[in-house]
Length: 298
Image 1 (cartoon, one colour):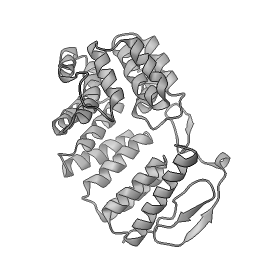
Image 2 (cartoon, rainbow, N blue to C red; image 1 turned 60 degrees about the vertical axis):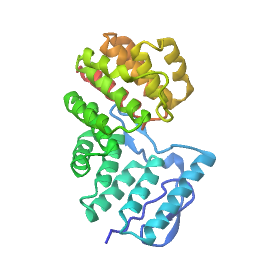
Image 3 (cartoon, rainbow, N blue to C red; image 1 turned 90 degrees about the vertical axis):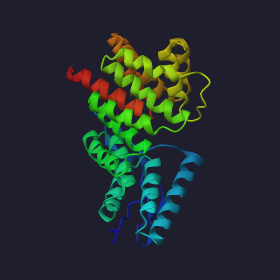
Image 4 (cartoon, rainbow, N blue to C red; image 1 turned 30 degrees about the horizontal axis):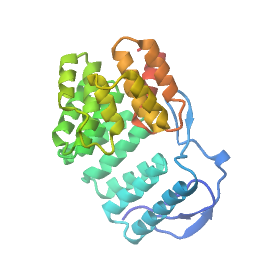
């Protein structure tokens, strides 16, 4: 039986539902909100993913996921959904606690390790992410998302050879253009960090402007940029669209500066990224890691 889990909504005057208990009212002022994490650069980062109608929608979805789990607490899929709804609100520590409870009851469920590993990345605990995602890959070696996140966890630790192996495994599971584009972007960057430029260029051979990409347009644009089919001006214009675009496109450009020897421009781009609000973005986390390494002289 899963343990009681009573922390659901961490701010506002909202009903807080126990995992297997009664509803109560909990009010917390945003000004008193604890940071979700302290970044590698010492910045306090808060769980504030949205406002207004969007926030209300996310909170309602969390409430419904809690009710579903309360009605059947021994359903692994409901545990995962509840954890995901917490994560959509950037409440990653709570999500990790949920996945821990799930793993206690379902120790061989690959998706619980996969989701907890992802959220360890979000809170900058990369070693734990590698451990969880390695376990997940052993339990389910055919899952794209497991290999994708394992590659990222290794990449963020500077373990580029291990990242390369995970991304190559990920590429073998890619089923559509969106997946191909996402993994190809990180494969290319990993190979460039390993100074294997010829292999990196081969990654770009199958990338073209006519690919059917719906979710990973930013990665697609970056790959076209690496290939020479987009100018730096075009990419820098796209960066202005949103904080997420700045984090995603900006990291690709900053990393391109870095492995092409322009450390000053790379550092300026990374600093620009870590000033935006979208701190869970992979590009933001990667930029933060790069700046941390620069501060450490590595």
